Length: 267
Image (cartoon, rainbow, N blue to C red; front, top):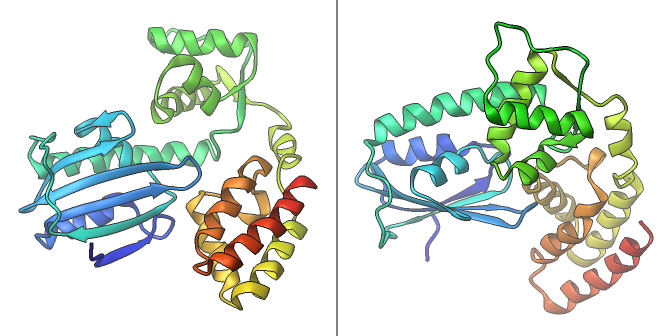
């Protein structure tokens, strides 16, 4: 299938891609892939309308609202690919307006919660009479009263989407009811790979495919929504696999995996 538009979500957001294609009256499928969690999503356009979206277990509008928040991974647009389903009936202009407001809210939250791996705990402060807490807010507070949790961990325990939990965490932090754990960043640093790892990685890859190696490494790291300076050790195996997939010679791909396996064992 011919691809006429592709790129990295660290350079352009999903909503901008959708707006561009809708304005251009393009019909087809937007494919989204988030490397760090091996997630995929699809958005279908037809006659200046968003007609279908799917992401993991979400379908229709919930899937679309989930996908527009992705800030890492790859995207591509395949023209003239029609969807067999029509899961979105809402007028596209209204849908995009709602999505824009949601995305702006997410950007505000993201500035205060730099990583969903940062842990939070309950403070000794009591809720102000002017703050009206809902059942889920109290449930989250009770969890943080007993232990320290990150947004990722809270999402799993509460059975909620990361974005919804992040919104609650942001609100409670602003109210002074919870706070990021002191030393959380330092603790996370111990779980990150050293700069020497990426230097060795680049040297090995240059030997196999030449100077383009550094560009490939940077692009793949970005699809994981990470930075080389703070790249988590637990993401190294899928990172190596993703980089290996960029090597088109099977023999060189195998050699790269074998070399990197030795390095992974020493982490």
